Length: 279
Image (spheres, rainbow, N blue to C red):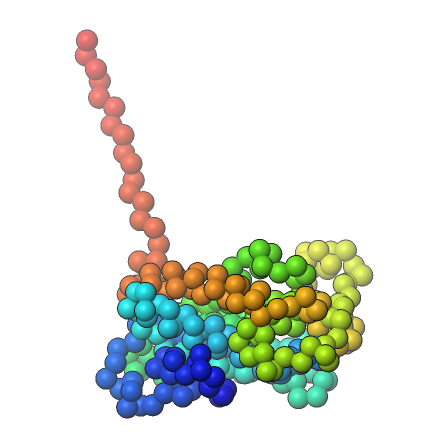
C-alpha cells in the first residue's frame, strides 16, 4: 500500500501488503497484527492516511523486533483505512466516515477468514482515536471463543509526556514527529497550521464527565489539535523505540497464550491452620 524505503524493504517477510504466497504458505505465524486507521485530514501538513501509515509502520517494526529477539512470528495485515469520524469532519473533502456497523462487518470478515485458516491470536494496532473496538471484540469472543482478539492504541504504549513538549490530540507534535521519522518526504511543515483547538463551554463536558462527539468545524480551523511546530524526527525515533519495546514485551508473552484462562493470574489460596499448642 505504501512505497518501500530501505528500512521497510528489510521487513517484507512480515508485511502482507508486499510479501507473496510463496513466502508465507509453509511458515507458521504466532500472532496476526492488524493496523487500523482512518481517511481524514491531518492539519494542513500531514497525509490523509497518517493514522494508517503510522500504525502500519509501528506494526512492522514490532514484527521485526519480536522475531529477532524472541523468535515470535507475526504477520502485519494491510492497514484498514475506514475510521469513525466526528460531525464536521465528514463535510471536509475526501474525509470518509465509516459507521460502527461498517467497521464491525469488516472486522468480522477478517476474523472469520483468519479463523478458517487456523489463526487464533489477533492484535489490532489502532492508529485513530475515533475507532472503538471493545464492543466488537466482546461480540466476536462469543462467536469465536478460542480466537483471542486484543486491541491497542499504539501511541499509548509509552508515556508521551516523556518525549514531547506540547502534546495535542490530532496532527500534533507526536504524530508529526513520528511521521518525520518514518516518512519525512510526506511532511510539509511550511504548510502546517497552528493546530489551535477550542474546548467545550460546559464544564462537565470540558472535564470529560459528559461526552458528545465534537463538531470538528467548531473545534479547529485547520483540522489539527495541537501545535506541530516543535516536532522533530529524533523525537519521533525515541518515542517509537519506547512504543516498540512495550509491544515486543507484550507479544512475546501473548504468543504463548492458547486459551483465555491463561491470561489471568492464578493466586493460590493461602490457608493457615492453627494447631492447638499444648504446653
